[in-house]
Length: 409
Ligand SMILES: Cc1cc2nc3c(=O)[nH]c(=O)nc-3n(C[C@H](O)[C@H](O)[C@H](O)COP(=O)(O)OP(=O)(O)OC[C@H]3O[C@@H](n4cnc5c(N)ncnc54)[C@H](O)[C@@H]3O)c2cc1C
Image 1 (cartoon, rainbow, N blue to C red):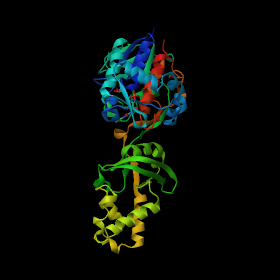
Image 2: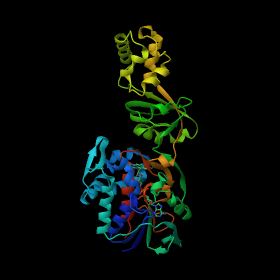
Image 3: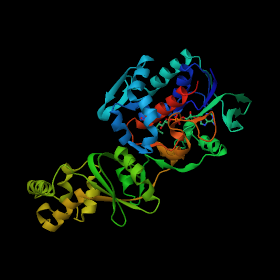
Image 4: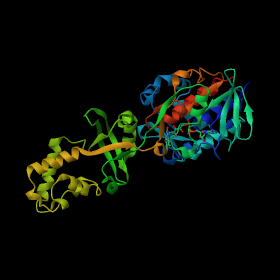
């Protein structure tokens, strides 16, 4: 039996504390906030998309950074074991579209409550309002931590302090400082799964508009295609967001640092050009004695109609029967290519996840132990690991946390 300190009571930390205690260790969980799981509480818009119900093999395809590093962690404690653990601790789960798993209650707080029950059963010593200032290392071994009030000694320390996204939840990057002090390298953190800013200020008029089932293509200024997918997007007062754009941000992250990108939205991806042209012709025929601005409302959501009219170059008051073939074709093209200039990503305050973090080459993937300092472990988002939305990021935290805790005995 060892004395184990877990720093950070987020997803990875709660799981690491549970598994270290299940292994017969005496565990202290240190959390600087007034409660555990402050970030978990806001996940999935307060419903907590706790994991994804996909096959394990498919899981790795959704991991953007260092999927191979996760093999042991995921195979030792996968998405099914996680679900079983949560259900056993009093929180029934349900699976929604895309394999996204949520608590039946739709309350993220019930996930945290399940962990609190497990931590209590295992007699984990939870100390809230306790900020760790540094890790005590002697002769290449972790010996404990310094807090503002005292030093606490231990045989092993697991760092689960998260990344730097949504710092208001407590993830302020302390883990990077601890790791650097211990000799570790940090892959420069950048925001991921984050909205974009656009050059066009017209987005302000579209704020709140969600476009479902559209196709987005993102290219560099030189025309290189770097992202293409279908899904749902959202206009905001500064640019574009929503699931499709958040996923895109994870893919184009490196490119946008070098310059603006071009977003092209296909509003009618289910139709061929010919089919759409026929549809518009029919619409124009039915409304030939109306003004253009009063004839096209059925094609778009209400908020988008003035933008499409403005961009079409056709005078809004023009009678439909006076619209030329060229004008109509341009209008059809516009529906396939509604373009915006993506100028930058929003910051860490709005990023679902941090890309970058502690270099995984310096961590043993079978145990999560540092290869540089004995008895020092890392788990969760503090590591250079990130994935798409869909429950994958939390599963990374649960699995790496579990692996770290279960290898201390
Ligand atoms: C808005 C939002 C929604 C999200 N939704 C989902 C979702 O639905 N599904 C999904 O899979 N992922 C989601 N994520 C991502 C997911 O929440 C994170 O990847 C995950 O929480 C990372 O877990 P972690 O334990 O590594 O870090 P965190 O959950 O950030 O926990 C770190 C903890 O360490 C504590 N800490 C930090 N420094 C110190 C210190 N010096 N001393 C003591 N304590 C310290 C912090 O206070 C914090 O409690 C979402 C993220 C955000 C921001």
